[in-house]
Length: 307
Image (cartoon, rainbow, N blue to C red; front, side, top):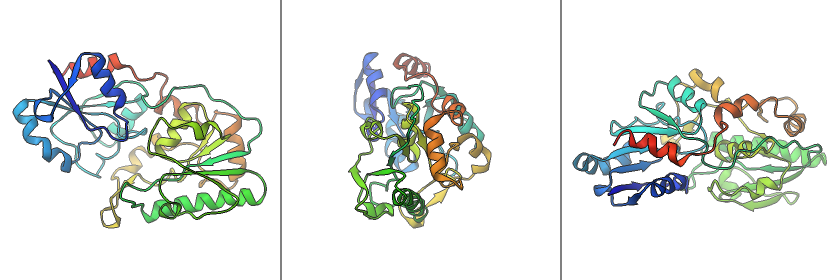
């Protein structure tokens, strides 16, 4: 019997689990599973399965933790020697991960979060959806990320003042935790950390966001602008554990999205341009989203080369 277990982060492992089931795998307990799938192989998690892996000769694989190339191994925590291989969405992810020195095998299996659609231009930009950087599950968001959210929010509020846009804010936790504040001129919607929730973006002309939600919007052809792309990736459960990656200079030019609302002297014109053409972001989309959606067969065949 072919068996697996999975740590399913925010539903992002659903397509990988479904692929295994399609190919005859049955879910099992860790100690009995041939295949262990997880989004991150951080030491705290791996110590709990170390003995099970060794006694059962299980193989550990990583699927993508988020839409962008995984940078956790670049100094945020060490990669586990127990991990056999990792799966990535597009070839641009490989370029980033190799740039900071990760050596384990990487297999491209296609974009798994949304459909991939052509860019859909908008002739008249009016409806803006702002999806700020969301706090961790414990409510922590770094001072840096709160400041990024607040600066972006104020720029957009200034556009509201000038009657240039209508603004909706999609937030995950209470506004103040993300560094924001209520404003009677703004519409607010509560979102979830779920890659399948794109209806709010569908109702906007342009999206201003960061990381996975922004990447999903690019994938479905929605005009998108990101924010503070020049800041190094970072992580932490509180301020004492907050840290940045080690090798940002080695791959930042590969990873940064070309349209950044905090890196322009004309934010409104940037939003208008983002709506009219994808000339600035077409190459980035080709590298980071790719042209192929997730292939269950490609994923399982790659995994089974190690069994």
